[in-house]
Amino acid sequence: MLAIGIIILFFAIFYLGVQLLILICNRSIFASNLKERVNQDGLVNFSIIIAAKNESNNIPVLISALKKIDYPNDNYEVIIVDDNSSDNTLKIAEEQCSNIGNISVVKAVDKSYSGKRGALDCGISFAKHPNILITDADCIPNENWLNYCTLSVNNRCDFYFGIAPFFQKSNIVNKISCFENFLNSFLAISAVKLKIPYTASARNFGFTKYAYNKIGGYSKTLDTISGDDDLLLREAINNNLSICSLTHPGSFVYSESKHTFKEYFSQRSRHTQTSFYYPIKQKLFLALWHSLNIVFVLSPLLLIVNNLFILLFLLKLIFDITKTMLFQKKFGYKFKMLEVIYLQLLYEFFIVVHFFRAIFGRIEWK
Image: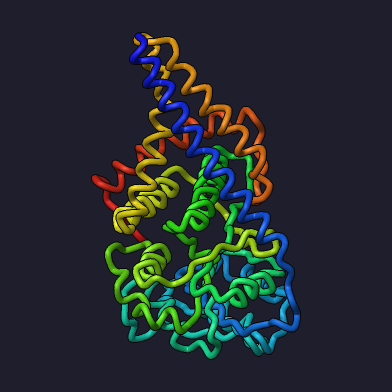
């Protein structure tokens, strides 16, 4: 019994240390980013690249949001790349952008790569500015998005990514997606501070054209049908390029979550499969983090061995609630305490589900 008590104490102290480290990383990176202010004299030029495939329902909303961007028109351009859509995406985009001087619509032809990579690469080849920003056709960037992206460029970041929250709704799929997005973003921001970045959402992703060309563009990111963003970041890591994060609310890019469990599981399985191709250090970090949390969630099953195992579960529960209450607004979310408890348990369960689906399931892309 004494030996089991010592083991439980060791795991509790280790978990406490890891959780505190992650909390401190997030707090420091938010504090440092919020102190920075946009300097209008330091404006830089951006080319925003958007790949669109069968997005006729979303393109009008996107274009409306792009029109509201608070940034001098001469300092940025938008290139919408129609990726051989079978609907009216191309026609709608051309009609709505015909009188907007800094937004152009092109069709992806003679792509160097299949899928979304090829469309993005096509758009980047047309870009006239040295700084590239990528978002998706179903996204709505904050009107101050470019103002805060200038901070990363002026800080000489080769690659940078921002927070991309989902709009919160009342249905269960949305709640699960939002909470997952919060936890995944929370960990991703911490990983940047720890010098082990591993993921970047294509909904809010930027880099210099020089850095993109230096790593060979998407040529070394063909491991999976998805993951163009994460694997591009992997190549930046492999080439020792600087990677930063943006956390100011003015840099947020919002979008809708998936609406059905089928769509949700398909998306998460693709993302999980991409993680199999992360650098070894990043994979070890994620394996340690998720294994530790899953063990603590399952610790009540060992109550028949020793009642002290309940302490591990309670310790995790306390940190999960504290972490969410302290940081959720910084990531664009608001969860109730009861929601935190059951969504956290579902999150740990689905981590395992996504993992096995990524290994044994059939991964599809639109």
